[in-house]
Image (cartoon, rainbow, N blue to C red; front, side, top):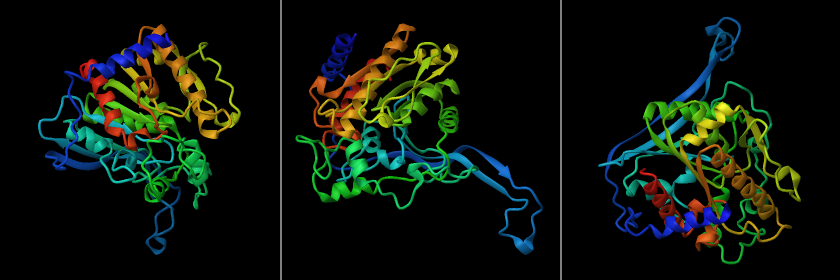
Length: 363
């Protein structure tokens, strides 16, 4: 099965000839039909008591708004039929998809220049959607100050702190590393993937049919979103992990052993009827390099369990009649990428792989 998937991935790269090419614009020109922002989804809760103007800052009788997502969108002139909706990962924000740590075009601009409308989401209770109706639960990503520079450096497979892995595609220099560390975004309420999926589903219901692109912990939100909307035409998941993969009841596999068990891949069971929603759309999962480099390093140790679970997830979807595949970039000659592959020096090349896959599926 893995050999077949590798052949499919190689075919996708070869098909770049004749496919729509991701432009490498040098003049920086983007012509927009529209752009804007809005909140979507969410809930309210009203505090007991009676509002008093004498004590107008007291919560009595007042209503809290929260649990919505924030969306920034850009629609180019002559946009392609299906917009791309970008879901960030854990402790991140829509900034994931914007300019790279060294100031080049991120995926938002790359795909905008290729003619796609782009919608960047801040998931509920984070970033510009920081209002919550529930007190934060002291999740590690909710702490300020956030003492995690070495942890993030190694978990995201940049290298062994403070160095980068040999041959790394991460932008070079202290300024890029500092920009990476300044991209983290704390949670302002409990992490609830069902709340996140509900807001993302509401966005698809508003926008209409489109393609979902997720990263990292956003992957599990992506797996849940087809349960609440019929408007997802495909899912491109960049290094999904750090939150559960989804399997039908009775079919959840064992995770690969992990030296650091708390970091290992996880999975949850859902009713088969729900899982079957994932068999109705094409899904591709894309992973970067340095995953099998050393079992003693925190990042590779974690991500080899996630990649193994991704193969099992794809196999399960395909057993039930779906069309899922895994592309491990080194297998198709793209090397050096960390967990933040969309931000690295070869991100145009990775965007082309995604573009080829979308073209193969008529998107």
